[in-house]
Image 1 (spheres, protein in one colour):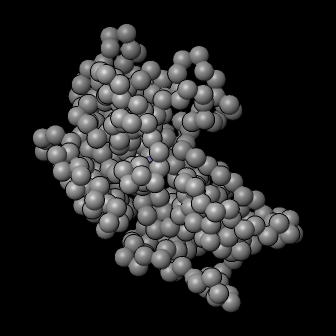
Image 2 (cartoon, protein in one colour):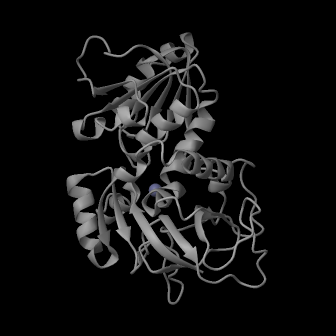
Length: 328
Ligand SMILES: [Zn+2]
């Protein structure tokens, strides 16, 4: 059992709250969570996913999903697509079985949840974002393959896009461009290692304002952005799509261009255990180097959760944080 300390509102929480995404009701929303262990079952190994001993009072982050015992993943590196998957912040709350989301005081971790002990030195606002945003982006980099010496374009300057810029920078990308139609978000780009920022081009623009690149990451889920991304790839380029997690019109793909330029399109939803471990290490190594904490632009308490969702959906900050309970 974990005492939740901090939960950040992910885009999918906001989509659910606003009715653009369907989840079971009732549900305890919130899946970007960090907390302190309150109690460990004596039958548990008392070791975290990295093999570190854990005890009550230790701070932990945990995977968004748990694969029930006896269920085999469809592919070894795709546990997040297992049948009967349990997902924090997405599960029907019935009777006493309500300790499964971040917008609550406590969470009971399910068997087979990958949880990792982290240092209390890492700001809780940053630690909370590991279990969805940063792990998903780490997965996108895995799917992209080698980043070293590559030119990269990132569509979408939200938390995923900025995290992607910083991860690509650390992975040795030679040039990183960041695109968004919200100027107030683009100013963050440079602070996370971006070489140049661009506002989204209009559909009629004759030539794209950026150079051709080896890798394009789409965080927006916008069909127009994904098409522009494909048009931005040089020979042998790869497009990685992770933003399209809500219904939208199909993307226009020029098949001849894909064939003649030897392009690849790869998708990723959520992340696997390696991504979670690598994202945690990335934040441990870089939380002081890049201003991730400042991206949680406004903080609310759990009592003010309605106001938090209203602010998040109307003002569209990079992230809204929710402080759970009384602590300093
Ligand atoms: Zn999320």
